[in-house]
Image (cartoon, rainbow, N blue to C red):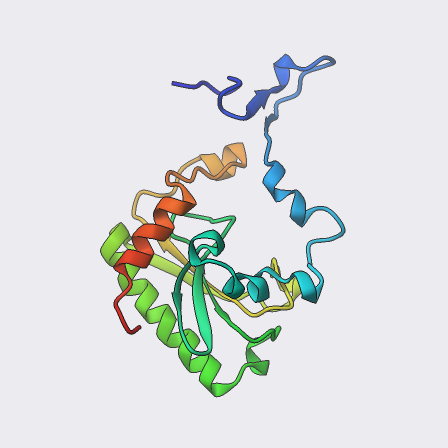
Amino acid sequence: MAEIGDENTGVEHSSDFAAVPDAFQRLWTPHRLVYIQEGQQPHIDECPFCLAPSMDDEKALIVARGTHAYVLLNLFPYNSGHLLVCPYRHVATYDEATPEEIAEIGSLTQVAMRVLKNVSHCDGFNIGMNQGRIAGAGIAEHLHQHIVPRWALDSNFFPIIAGTKAIPRLLGDVRREVAAGWPAGD
């Protein structure tokens, strides 16, 4: 089993550095560099929620497609099975969406909840939208709703004390399971 500070974990303990050690551990996440370079918000031509539907479902982490919206896994999940429901159209806020888009986002959210309950046996959900950069939207220019499955025992000290979220399942495995559990025609 890998220990914190072990080269197999991707975590380095500060006592291994030259200079004076501090109390922090470093979890290296180079895949998140896209959110740091040149600001967090992508140019419209590089919007991940506009590009995803043109890609293969497995590569884009898409689990279901509707007429006006689709469902995909969050690339940086809070929990295993963290889904996003996005309209295909590039709109920034809920009030800019059409009634058809809103209805389908709601319908896909309901189906997603049922599927996640069935395949992951979660006990509850956090569901919400961050509207605009100031409200914490990671991709502020493209509307998306979060569906975060929760379990009775999923709270622990890691996020608070260590500033780290443990995700026990790989994205590809979760995508396959959720997509397979999605009812045909929904």
